[in-house]
Amino acid sequence: MVENHSHDHEHHHHPHDARSARKSLSAVLILSLAYMLAEIVGGIKSGSLALLADAGHMAIDSAAIALSLFAVWIAQRPATAEKTYGYYRAEILAALINGATLILVAIWICYEAWERFYLERPVRGDLMTGIALGGLVVNFISLFLVHRHEGHNLNTRGVWLHLVSDTLGSVSAIVAGVMVWKLGWTIADPIISIVISLFIFWGAWRLVRECVDVLLEAVPKGVDVSEIKKSIEGLAGVREVHDLHVWTMTSGVPLLTVHVTAEANVDSGELLSRINSLLVGKFRIDHTTVQIEPETYVAPDECCKILKN
Image (tube, rainbow, N blue to C red; front, side, top):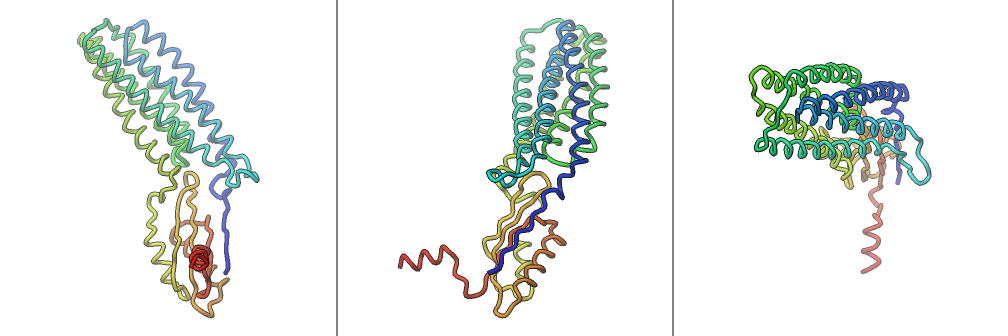
């Protein structure tokens, strides 16, 4: 029986990328905190729920970015004897918390908007529009800073979703502000607030679902386990493939374990090399544990059954 463990976590987590992401997230955090205060003051003075909702969302953004910065930092810590995979899943936990808080924000906005349908309050559309325009500029700058990191992992994607939904919130607040300012339609404020919350909820729900899939060790998106099994079985010298598992350690790091029964007189080392080449070349999976078993090999669970009988 031959086992091979192929793990190279650094391949997916470059220190330069991590430093660059930290710098971008730090700049966005400063911008978010500064404009959050401006929106709170503006929302109170103008009486706009849409502005206060956007300020609340920006407060959540700031907390989310701070959490993401912590996750980026701790994920770079080396593995230990107790945590043999290191701290990679800290990024997934951060993304999950960000998604969950976004869902709560969306529900709160809907609740406040619903009340305003019955308790109409005066809104200063001109001030509301001006503040929202400033918020839009800040969000565009933040999106530009985070955009190049957005596809790296679920953690930075969570921040990206926060910023996208906040940008939509600013656009919606501008539209509502103009309607209130020019047309006197104060009802536009709660209506636009609900629209904002629906956008927030949809993005957050998808993020939470993906994080849960990772934590439950579901098969990564785009990976076909049956196709992997079929491809390994198609290699010369392979008699059977069993106990095949594929899951995700963190974003962009799929892991695979498999037991392969080899035919008699097959060079186990050479077969192992061909299996690993197949997994890397065709399926882009290089974090693998492959166990090559001779035809006479008896699995531990089968041994227990024999002993019981």
